[in-house]
Length: 128
Ligand SMILES: [Zn+2]
Image 1 (cartoon, rainbow, N blue to C red):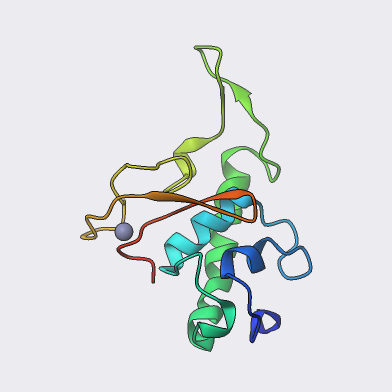
Image 2: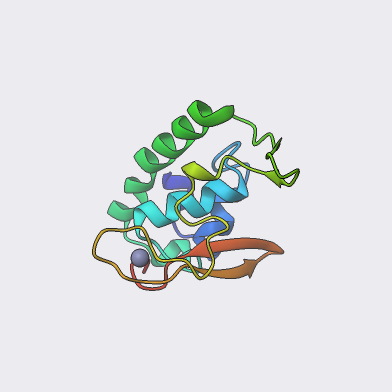
């Protein structure tokens, strides 16, 4: 994770950079940053080293949950109503725009922004 240091890019984009964290998908980058309490727009170089180091166990946790929920690749599947869906039960922020933040005691509302053409979901209240 030290390779992220000093980069003048938003942390979300840095997480998606294949040279930094191979295989971390767009959905999971949002999930990791929510658990870490880091705003996806924050520039890597403006995040304390201790907080960056804290991302590593979060990445492992989120990816192992994703594998347990249906595989390392995000295979979509048909819901009973015929709509395509993902394994949404593992997501705390992805596709939850306008829904209450699940962080205990937060009370914030999940927001969606676009970064580099991809959706980012985050809580403006508990992600700084
Ligand atoms: Zn929150």
